[in-house]
Structure formats: C-alpha cells, structure tokens
Length: 327
Image 1 (cartoon, one colour):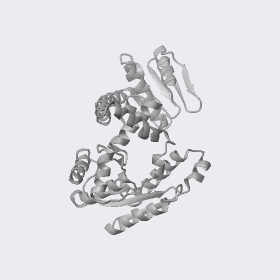
Image 2 (image 1 turned 90 degrees about the horizontal axis):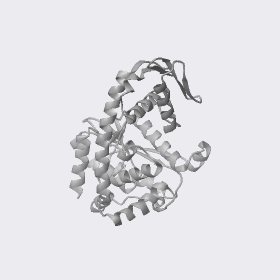
Image 3 (image 1 turned 30 degrees about the horizontal axis):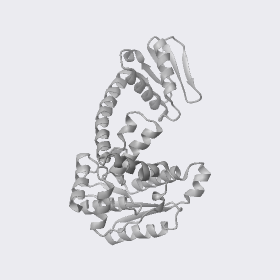
Image 4 (image 1 turned 120 degrees about the horizontal axis):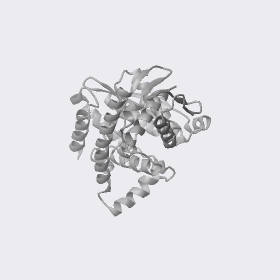
C-alpha cells in the first residue's frame, strides 16, 4: 500500500504537471492524517522529483490541542531538515471582527498565510491534502447548495497556485499508509462533530449512500470525470467565442458584438454573458440567473440606448445594433 500510494502521487504530479524539477513547494500541514500523509509522500519523492519543501502550519486558536499539533508538525520537520513556517491567529475573535463564520474566516487566514509563505520562499505552488473523499463531499455539497455543471466536477488537481496530489486517493488508504509507517497524526475532534454541513455530509449522508451502493465513492468519481470532460469542452468553446465577440477592452469598459450569439444555444449565451460580467468585475458575487436572463433579453431586443443596471456593480448598454458595452 505504501509504495502504491507513492506511485499514485508521483503519477498525479507528473501526468498533471503539478510540479517541475527544481521547484520549491509549500506543503500545507495541519498535522492531521491527510496532510501528514501528503508531507511524508512528498518527502519520500523529494529526490526523485528534485524538489525542495517548505511546511506551513496555522494554529487557529480554537482548540487546546492546537499547540501540541504545532509541536508535532515542527518536530517532524526538524528531524528531516524541512523549513517550518508557523502562524497563530485567534480565529474566534477575528471572525467576529470580520463578521464571518469561523469556518470561512479560518480558511481565508490559512490560504492568505500559505500564499505569503509561497511568495517569501519563492515557491512555485502550495500543496494541499484534499483526497478523493473530500472531492465527493464537495460535489455533494455543491449539489445541495445548488450549482451548475462546473460545481458537479468538484475540485481539480490544480487551481492557480494550489495543487492536490492526493486527489485520487481514498481516505481509507491514507489511514492505512499512516498506520503501515507508524505515522501517528493528530486528530481534530471537531471533524467528528456535525456542526458544519460538510461534516454532516461526511458523517451521515455518505455512509447512508454507501449502504445503498458500496461503490458510491467510485461512481461519483467516475461521474465527476465525465462531467469535467464535458465542461472542459464547453469552456474551450466559449473562450474561443469570447475572443471573437470582444471588440475592445480596457480598465473601464468592455465593448462586445453580441450578434455572434444569435444562433448559439441558450446555455452558451448564458456562459458568455457570465464571462463578460466576470471579466469586468473579476468575480460573479451577487450575480444571479435572473440577471443573466434579463441581459439576454436586453440584447435580443437590440434597441439602441437601452440599458441594464445592477446597482453600483455595472451597466450594460446597447450602443448600436448588435454592439453593447459593459461599464
């Protein structure tokens, strides 16, 4: 099992171009089973991949055990000559100050710190320990909250500077790896409490679905890959269409020719409009399906001077037949 997991992680890295030779990699390590497995595997692949490792650990100041976890991870790094970077933050206090949930606040603080370490150490990427079970949880979470095709594809091996070398490995195999090598990771008791929706999915929903079908995890994984292929095709098609549609773009506005959308499927029209809005705003926060449908109605009517305004976010105006601007 140990050699098998090392081989799988190596293949994931090579086949998906997650790391290049000579790279320095920040490994996000909580001290839990997943991140300790990830760190140990990357350490064993260090010479083969010709990489250097930097470990980043965040203490959220929520649990008494957090100080012990810091010592545990730091000692592992000291024994192997791995650089250790540490941050302690009072997340309960900060979340109240920022008016965020502790979960969201903790995630933001973690990833901000990981990125800070990446820049300071001139590292190429940040390795996190999301595994196959995490990805299934993400798909179910997205479906429960309501999502489109992209949400059903779950997490990717790579997103910006984040890489996920364990993404195809089941949790049970990670636990077996740790057990075989005598790695005694720390366990966060809050992961066993049904206080967050993700925990409820992990502890109640998935076990129930596995009772109905023992192959549930594998089936969801296959479904995710099929949907990802479909989504990748659509994204590529829309990107090429965007290149043709956009006439002029600068910091203040985007001028586009929407005549090319007339014969496209409604699904493509919606994606193009979302992409144009995201290009202007850098995000889609607060943009709902009804907004996109109203904009499509605006361009279908194609009346010069007509506008669609969403608060202080943006305005779309028909400049002349088939030409619109977002500003």
